[in-house]
Image 1 (cartoon, one colour):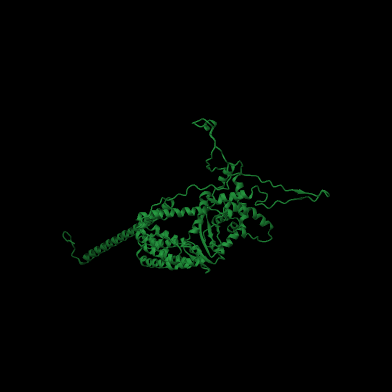
Image 2: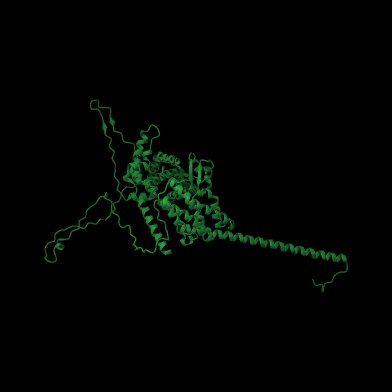
Length: 571
């Protein structure tokens, strides 16, 4: 510091006072500077947190927009999966051909290209034949007398044959009235003791609707997802006015009548070795604001092929815990913590869903492409194995042995990769969440290899839970708690019929015709096992619902065509 122009006193005490004042000022300045540095660092931390929060919200917005408007299938570029050699799947196919699987057709790029194959044009499905059981009306088209004359000699031409073509026409649904005439009898000698023939028990006592109409209404609302006001419009086109309040009462009475059959389905599902479960939300009318409630779905195994639903006011774990109280076996579900109450009893074994796991990695492919696609490649190899096993019709012990031989090594390599890479990612990032979810669920994700009755994912329950989701889009809400429970009954009835490949209306109308008789004549709980959809189909094979078989063939043909196109592009 320059002392030029500075007048310093000669008194030592004054000099000390000046120095102390300068030191105090300097200390205050340093304190102010430290406070400013702390404020700046705090602001930097806030900015950093805001940037991280903004990045997370941007990722969430991208996921929501993709979920709302984007494609639903989690497709990825096949070239991204070349982190692993396709020779491994080729070796697998060769091993399967040698004994594990009878016949396998893997996507092998190493096939003999020296012998060129003729490129065949893919065949379309063409026009299907109109079923023979439909009534036919013949319309004859003839030439007029003037057009019949031969243009050469002028003589009338004679008929030598007919060209027949068929056209499908629509006749609106018809309503008919069933008149129940109860014959009265009396003794002519005594002129008393009048007896009247009893009327068989009906689905609705003294009700206007017959079994077929009730089945149509229940199926239309909970199988075709038509709100009652649309059904009101459709019935009015047939010349009869039935208000939606009346239809609502009939649907409620149908649900109450079918409740014993629904309870039997629930009992049979709980007897399964494996149960798939999931849930979805539904609004319920309430004062002030609609209440968010839940539909739970439970799908049994092959021995109990029923899909049943439960309605609850909340998503608390006590709801699946109550339904699965007597269940012992494998439960395939997502990572919802509410199922922990079920697992804690020790009689239910958790099986996780690899499709849920895959979704985390798929959403992280934009933020950390290398790691995300490497994980997706592992999962793709596991699904490729399942495709091969499915084509070979492997089940039970054979499927268990094949998974132990081929899937377990891939899972072990995946586990080692997760362990080595997890330390290099931020835990709260998108890719970090994928690592965390996979590691937390790892034991449950690998459990499908322990039993041939298990699936690699929970897509069966995912498909079944779509039914109330579609209903939600059309009907918007349930009117009350009792309405929610009745909706669960009718959803279970229609979904189980479709799941068992039974034509829903034929089965439902037969059940509504037979069930009142069983309930009226039974002194105790009636035996309704022969009315279950799979048992009923065995005695009525003509009512098999073939549309799912047709769709399955079409999906397989489409998959093969897409695979052939991708294979030709890679070449």
